[in-house]
Amino acid sequence: MPEHLTAPLVVEFPFTRSLGPVQSAFLTGLRERTVLGVRTTDGQVLVPPVEYDPRTAEEIRDLVEVAATGTVTTWAWNPAPRRGQPLRTPFAWALVRLDGADTALLHALDAPGPDTVRTGMRVRIRWAPERTGAITDIACFEPHDDGATGPAARTATAHASSPGAFADPVTTVTTPARLDYTYTPGRAQSRYLTALTGRRTVGERCPACRKVYVPPRGACPTCGVATDEEVEVGPRGTVTTYCVVNIKAKGQNIEVPYVYAHIALDGADLALHGRIAGIPYDRVRMGLRVEPVWTEGARYPDHYRPADEPDADYDTYKELL
Image (cartoon, rainbow, N blue to C red):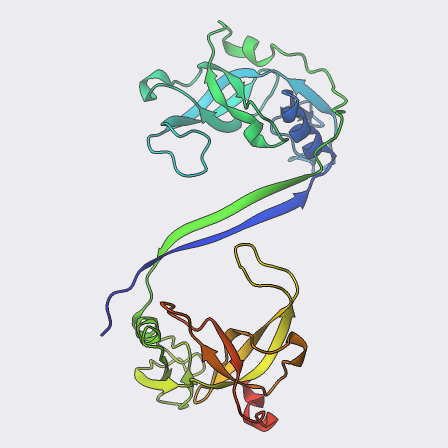
């Protein structure tokens, strides 16, 4: 058996969406150090604002300015902040009902320790020095002893409508999504990855249908039975289908356009992915015979290039499209 393999894996992408009139006004207001809520059909003021009444589903656009001070309704201490969180030192996650609002806003509360935080404590917004029109324009909340308590604090700001009109409004928002975890491959993939260190590609044969799957999965996806017979395939293969990439990927030093293809390695019954190089992108074709190109220290081929062979006949790979 190969060594027990583990590797850190990060899945990350920025999600960008357009904003409606309510969310646009809310985020633009934060940039201008103004907090806006929205009034529902029954008179409640919601912060953060939404575009549809949560009870009636009716569209709502009556914007209301609320205060930058508020009351903690509940909280939880965070002793070990993670990457990307609002503060680098320990802090409390708190639900804060801003004065003039009827709902609470979740954000970080900068406090010396958990013994200094309590439900009902008064806080105020600490604005970020540089603001761009995002929830992070509120750097955090901080303790603020202004003597206001009870219902009087909640209604300290009049529920006056606000036009929500600002110069250069924010119309889109980009939210970075990121997932960090440690990946541990199973027996089959561990054998596959270990073989790649020796510039070999291995699959596993199904004992029922006799098909060879690369990369191996430990079980046949068709028959559902375990696979343990190791089979070396390739190194050459056939392009079964492909696409031309015209958009440069972030973090990749590959000039566009280039070709990414499904490649059926000799002896395999499942095509894998690979980049095609060493040939103009507009000359890549189905049936093209290719071979791997390795770089020093790499655990997998850098790309595939044309092999000095005639193109494969369509009937030899038509089942692998």
